Image 1: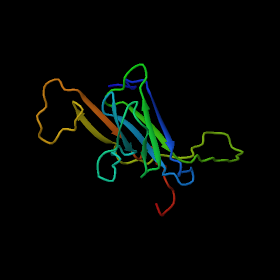
Image 2: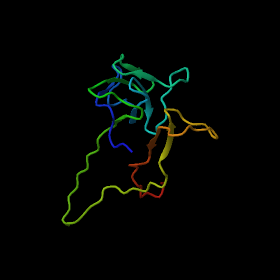
Image 3: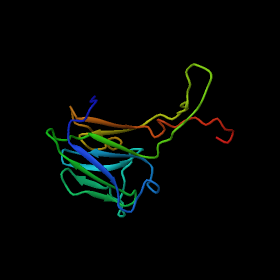
Image 4: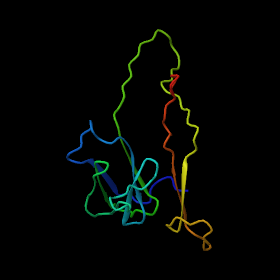
Length: 163
Protein backbone atom coordinates (compact mmCIF):
# COMPACT_ATOMS: atom_id res chain seq x y z
CA UNK A 1 0.00 0.00 0.00
CA UNK A 2 1.30 3.44 -0.93
CA UNK A 3 0.88 6.40 1.40
CA UNK A 4 2.04 9.01 -1.10
CA UNK A 5 2.00 9.63 -4.81
CA UNK A 6 4.73 8.13 -6.96
CA UNK A 7 4.93 11.37 -8.94
CA UNK A 8 6.04 14.68 -7.50
CA UNK A 9 4.55 16.98 -10.13
CA UNK A 10 1.93 19.63 -9.54
CA UNK A 11 -1.78 19.91 -10.18
CA UNK A 12 -3.51 23.28 -10.46
CA UNK A 13 -7.21 23.91 -10.11
CA UNK A 14 -8.77 27.30 -10.79
CA UNK A 15 -12.24 28.72 -10.99
CA UNK A 16 -13.28 29.49 -14.56
CA UNK A 17 -13.55 33.18 -15.48
CA UNK A 18 -17.35 33.20 -15.14
CA UNK A 19 -17.32 31.46 -11.72
CA UNK A 20 -16.86 33.12 -8.33
CA UNK A 21 -16.77 31.77 -4.80
CA UNK A 22 -20.43 32.80 -4.52
CA UNK A 23 -21.63 30.60 -7.42
CA UNK A 24 -19.00 27.84 -7.42
CA UNK A 25 -20.16 24.24 -7.21
CA UNK A 26 -19.01 23.14 -3.76
CA UNK A 27 -17.53 19.73 -3.17
CA UNK A 28 -14.43 17.59 -3.46
CA UNK A 29 -12.75 17.09 -6.82
CA UNK A 30 -10.04 14.56 -7.62
CA UNK A 31 -7.43 14.32 -10.34
CA UNK A 32 -6.95 10.54 -10.70
CA UNK A 33 -3.88 9.48 -12.66
CA UNK A 34 -4.47 6.61 -15.07
CA UNK A 35 -0.79 6.51 -16.11
CA UNK A 36 2.31 8.69 -16.10
CA UNK A 37 0.78 10.83 -18.85
CA UNK A 38 -3.02 10.59 -18.51
CA UNK A 39 -5.43 11.69 -15.78
CA UNK A 40 -9.16 12.04 -15.33
CA UNK A 41 -11.38 14.25 -13.21
CA UNK A 42 -13.56 12.62 -10.53
CA UNK A 43 -16.08 13.95 -8.02
CA UNK A 44 -16.03 13.50 -4.25
CA UNK A 45 -17.64 10.06 -4.59
CA UNK A 46 -14.84 8.92 -6.91
CA UNK A 47 -17.17 8.93 -9.93
CA UNK A 48 -15.82 10.12 -13.26
CA UNK A 49 -16.91 13.55 -14.46
CA UNK A 50 -18.42 12.99 -17.91
CA UNK A 51 -18.51 15.30 -20.90
CA UNK A 52 -21.67 15.96 -22.93
CA UNK A 53 -20.99 12.78 -24.94
CA UNK A 54 -20.95 10.66 -21.80
CA UNK A 55 -17.19 10.02 -21.87
CA UNK A 56 -14.84 10.56 -18.95
CA UNK A 57 -13.09 13.92 -19.00
CA UNK A 58 -9.38 13.23 -19.35
CA UNK A 59 -6.26 15.32 -19.62
CA UNK A 60 -2.61 14.85 -20.45
CA UNK A 61 0.23 15.58 -18.06
CA UNK A 62 2.00 18.70 -19.39
CA UNK A 63 -0.94 19.15 -21.77
CA UNK A 64 -3.32 22.04 -22.15
CA UNK A 65 -5.49 23.20 -19.28
CA UNK A 66 -8.84 21.35 -19.13
CA UNK A 67 -11.95 23.52 -18.76
CA UNK A 68 -14.77 21.56 -17.13
CA UNK A 69 -17.80 23.75 -17.74
CA UNK A 70 -20.24 21.53 -15.85
CA UNK A 71 -18.44 22.20 -12.56
CA UNK A 72 -16.91 25.58 -13.39
CA UNK A 73 -13.29 24.56 -12.87
CA UNK A 74 -10.02 24.38 -14.83
CA UNK A 75 -7.42 21.65 -14.22
CA UNK A 76 -3.83 21.16 -15.30
CA UNK A 77 -1.18 18.61 -14.27
CA UNK A 78 2.54 19.20 -14.74
CA UNK A 79 5.24 16.59 -14.28
CA UNK A 80 8.00 16.94 -11.73
CA UNK A 81 11.24 15.02 -11.23
CA UNK A 82 9.41 11.72 -10.67
CA UNK A 83 6.64 10.70 -13.11
CA UNK A 84 3.07 10.18 -11.95
CA UNK A 85 1.86 6.57 -11.79
CA UNK A 86 -1.49 4.80 -11.97
CA UNK A 87 -3.42 5.56 -8.81
CA UNK A 88 -1.71 8.86 -7.95
CA UNK A 89 -4.30 11.31 -6.72
CA UNK A 90 -4.70 15.03 -6.10
CA UNK A 91 -7.71 16.40 -4.22
CA UNK A 92 -9.18 19.86 -4.06
CA UNK A 93 -12.09 21.03 -1.96
CA UNK A 94 -14.23 23.96 -3.03
CA UNK A 95 -16.32 25.42 -0.23
CA UNK A 96 -16.84 28.21 2.20
CA UNK A 97 -15.09 28.33 5.53
CA UNK A 98 -17.30 28.51 8.59
CA UNK A 99 -16.28 30.59 11.59
CA UNK A 100 -17.72 29.85 15.01
CA UNK A 101 -17.44 32.21 17.97
CA UNK A 102 -18.50 31.35 21.48
CA UNK A 103 -18.04 32.48 25.06
CA UNK A 104 -18.09 30.27 28.11
CA UNK A 105 -17.37 30.44 31.80
CA UNK A 106 -16.75 26.69 31.93
CA UNK A 107 -13.39 25.07 31.30
CA UNK A 108 -13.25 21.73 29.55
CA UNK A 109 -13.32 19.96 26.21
CA UNK A 110 -15.94 21.09 23.72
CA UNK A 111 -17.09 19.35 20.55
CA UNK A 112 -18.50 21.46 17.74
CA UNK A 113 -19.51 18.50 15.58
CA UNK A 114 -19.87 14.81 16.00
CA UNK A 115 -19.81 12.18 13.31
CA UNK A 116 -22.75 9.84 12.69
CA UNK A 117 -21.41 8.30 9.48
CA UNK A 118 -23.17 4.94 9.22
CA UNK A 119 -22.25 4.16 5.60
CA UNK A 120 -19.03 2.42 4.64
CA UNK A 121 -16.67 3.94 2.08
CA UNK A 122 -16.94 3.03 -1.61
CA UNK A 123 -14.13 0.85 -2.93
CA UNK A 124 -13.14 0.62 -6.57
CA UNK A 125 -10.70 -2.10 -7.57
CA UNK A 126 -8.32 -1.84 -10.53
CA UNK A 127 -6.35 -4.83 -11.81
CA UNK A 128 -3.55 -3.98 -14.22
CA UNK A 129 -5.07 -0.47 -14.61
CA UNK A 130 -8.52 -1.82 -15.59
CA UNK A 131 -11.74 -2.44 -13.67
CA UNK A 132 -12.28 -6.22 -13.79
CA UNK A 133 -15.66 -7.55 -14.90
CA UNK A 134 -17.51 -10.09 -12.77
CA UNK A 135 -16.13 -13.55 -13.47
CA UNK A 136 -13.09 -12.28 -15.39
CA UNK A 137 -9.86 -14.29 -15.27
CA UNK A 138 -6.91 -12.44 -13.78
CA UNK A 139 -3.38 -13.36 -14.79
CA UNK A 140 -0.85 -14.30 -12.09
CA UNK A 141 0.96 -11.45 -10.27
CA UNK A 142 -1.33 -8.58 -11.34
CA UNK A 143 -0.85 -5.00 -10.22
CA UNK A 144 -3.83 -4.25 -7.97
CA UNK A 145 -4.90 -0.74 -6.93
CA UNK A 146 -7.82 0.53 -4.87
CA UNK A 147 -9.62 3.87 -4.93
CA UNK A 148 -11.38 4.31 -1.61
CA UNK A 149 -13.77 7.24 -1.20
CA UNK A 150 -16.08 8.13 1.63
CA UNK A 151 -18.53 10.88 0.68
CA UNK A 152 -19.80 11.12 4.28
CA UNK A 153 -16.40 11.34 5.93
CA UNK A 154 -17.09 14.72 7.49
CA UNK A 155 -20.88 14.88 7.59
CA UNK A 156 -21.81 16.33 10.97
CA UNK A 157 -24.64 14.99 13.04
CA UNK A 158 -27.81 17.05 13.20
CA UNK A 159 -29.66 17.18 16.50
CA UNK A 160 -32.92 18.56 15.12
CA UNK A 161 -36.00 16.37 14.96
CA UNK A 162 -36.31 16.90 11.19
CA UNK A 163 -33.03 15.12 10.46
